[in-house]
Image 1 (cartoon, helix red, strand yellow):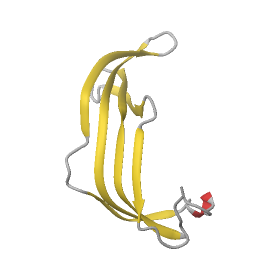
Image 2 (cartoon, rainbow, N blue to C red; image 1 turned 30 degrees about the vertical axis):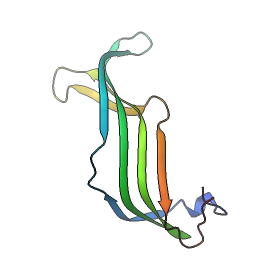
Image 3 (cartoon, rainbow, N blue to C red; image 1 turned 90 degrees about the horizontal axis):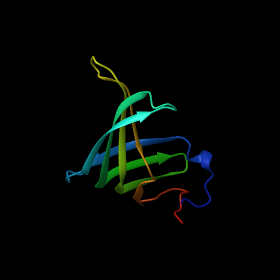
Length: 122
């Protein structure tokens, strides 16, 4: 959390560097596939894919704001990711829409360092 900074001061920012290390990942395990019937009367069929996501990456992301800059040096995200494809259709692209979401809030850990300017971390 940034101390003494109003949200509007961070509303506009530039990402001036964006790099992920060459580490392996993300890991998707195990993958579960099931038929998905949605809608009040279950008339729309689809395909639901659930997978456990484990993304742990060393990064070099530099973000500049009006009041200073900071670097994101590591990102870790763990949770169950769901891909819902519906309705299924007989011709390409074989589904009308794709939704990607986490069923529950994922575990998210972001390491921030090299904070400069008026930004201060709590």
